[in-house]
Image 1: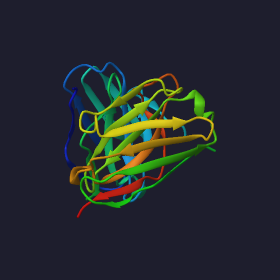
Image 2: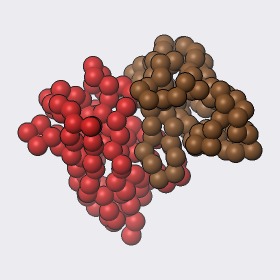
Image 3: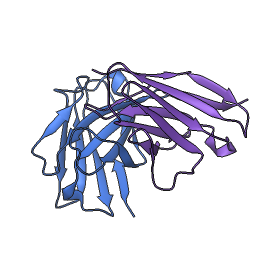
Image 4: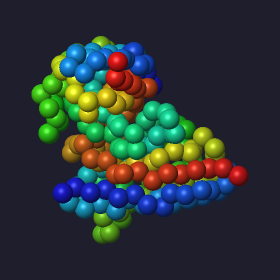
Length: 106
Length: 122
C-alpha cells in the first residue's frame, strides 16, 4: 500500500502570509493527487485534483504543484477562513490519505 | 444540487451490528460508483469500501474486509454499509462520498455527506 506523508504536522502562519504544505508518496502516484480542507465539525472540501487543478469555486490563492512522489499545496495570502486541517490523497490506485497538516494562526 | 445524506449511526456494543444508509439526490445515482470513507475522532481519513455503479463489484479496506458489506439500491437512490462484528477501532464518523465519474474503486471526492457517527463501546 502506498503511504502518504504530510509535513509539517502543524504549521503556524500569520494572516496575509504564504503557507506551503508538503505531501510525499512512498511510490509514484503520477498526478493523481488531491488536496482537501477540513474545518471542525465539517466534511472535507475538495480544493485541488490532478495535483494542480482547482476544484470549482476554490479561490485562486490556492495552488497545487508536483508529480510523482512530491507535492505541494500553496496558499498565497492566508485569510482567516483558511485556518483548518489539510489532507492530501492519492487516487492512482486504492485511495490513501495523508495524516493531515493543521494550519494555525501565528 | 448534489446531496448525500447519511443515517443509521449510533452507539453499539463491541461485536454488534449496524447498517448505515446514504440517500442521494441531484445526480444520476445509477451512473456512479460510490464509496464510504471514515474518520476516527481526532484522526485522519480512511477509505473503507467502494461499490461499482451497478453493484456488481465491491471493494474493501483490509481493516473491514469480512465484517462490512457495501450495497446499493439504484431504484431508491440509496447506498448502504452493513457493519458487523464491530470493534472499538471502528468508532468514527462515516462519510458517504461520490468519486469523480469514471472511477470505480478509486478517485477523488467532490461530494461528501455530512457524516454519521458510529460509536462502538460497552
